[in-house]
View 1 (cartoon, rainbow, N blue to C red):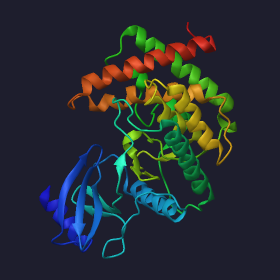
View 2 (cartoon, rainbow, N blue to C red):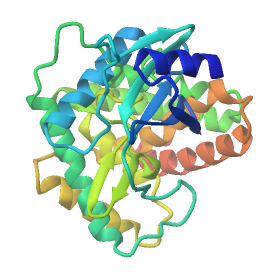
View 3 (tube, helix red, strand yellow):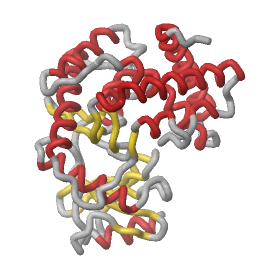
View 4 (cartoon, helix red, strand yellow):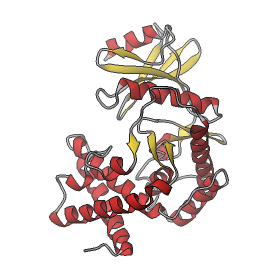
Length: 316
């Protein structure tokens, strides 16, 4: 791995820079210090995204930066390219953003004013959608789509949650009913919903706080999708907070202060977002801690699915 990082640094003219690994989730992220500046160098997970998708992600982030959002800005290499292949790894470099994440999933939120924070998160999310809609995408732009097919079709973006191999027979039937109900509902209302580019992963770890400024990072799962899906993604990771209802109201208030959004189908996207994690974990069952994560994902999605289907009269 050292050789790959050193080759990448040379492509950006950063030979001799100091570097260290800071994150190893879907991608490996390294902090690079060179000439009194700090950068983030990413080795992208092989096979997870095509080169065209990765280049599109970087162009989108650059457009958001120009639009006034606080996001990492892609840094061109010495040749002017935003992306290079080094062996099996696609490599890019971003500006380093200071600050700290809002929090960590599974740990109680520890902020002085959660309502103000979530109001601001809602506002930044709406600005992201607004800037994305006003951007003229370049020819060849391509990203995955969290549409009806991407959520409940034959090959969802994050795998078939109803086929998770750990499901009991009862849970499998429950998730199949959820899939069928959601598929029918989206067929009825999908064309009327606000749809466009979304971040798709605005969880606590991907929202950085630097003073009064909120910064959005990790666009790895960003693509085309229902705007309600973005709101649902932020909400479900906070449902165990004692003041969840207040945080939810604040998030929505902040969003609506920037742009309109029909919220009638929000509950559908909350339960679908929970279900996607049951699919996501399928190909990661051999990773450390996957058993506990899988149990947590299934338990959460089960409770939400039962409640949603009961409200829809689809429990049989």
